[in-house]
Image (cartoon, rainbow, N blue to C red; front, side, top):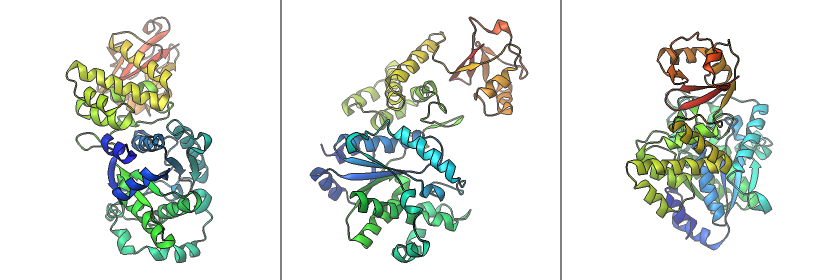
Length: 400
């Protein structure tokens, strides 16, 4: 099967500059392709999973990925999908975030024996001469065409800075540079990148008279069209220090029934016949399908051992037990509960902790905490541990 058919069957494919031309190329040779990741944080999140899995399917079909981290474009910030300008990061922060991305991407992509390449666009973008860039590249971009891009349209009311206006040119330059260095013939990205990808395809044609292709993947959304991967605490991170493997597992275990099939299709390697069978289950059967989904996604991101621990913990909690694999927070008898939970990063602030207590959303050993000034006592601990539940799904062990 051509990998294009795999991507379509699993629900990845959104748009393509020339689907039949790309299908023919992918059937004839090993194609070098790339996807870019701007270092906007020190961890990738659930929204990146679609791109990572699409790249993985491409590599499994025999093609060679280039994973580009945006050490150059990250200095500007992509306006796509934004209603305001991104916070400008220091060079040190950008370098740190790029290093974090490299480690996480290697969980999905095999870099051994030149099967994939990792590059940083800062290696060439930071060396460009501004006047030369304007004359050599800027002449191939019309302002009218750029302003028609959806990513720029969304910013008219609040204002689009000239800094961000350059982003499309920088991303297009990346494609041309990767084509020159590595014979890269395909750029892949989320569907919100369509305008930027087309710009790169056009620049390669105009400057090098080279035919290259662009392909976008569907974004990770729920059946109602809203973004998936958002939690009460913010993004669902791939870094175990920011989102524990247990919390990561629980997110997928608790998705809506209507989202099971698309998540199994996009976020696991299970054969599509099995995906459709699992998604067709009803009542208790669909809960089993969600457990399989949660285990498979957690295994891909965190490894088999962590996935098994998360699954074991979830089952222990569901049956009324307490499992040692829960996130643990060291505390002291006589310490305020709010202080301990804030220090343990259960809450970002003490005021957030107090608000949840006032709303009745925090329990200690299955008893609702009513006093925001509650002080931990020795009687709260059984064999040195106590169980805290934040909301309906977040569990933590207090250890002293």
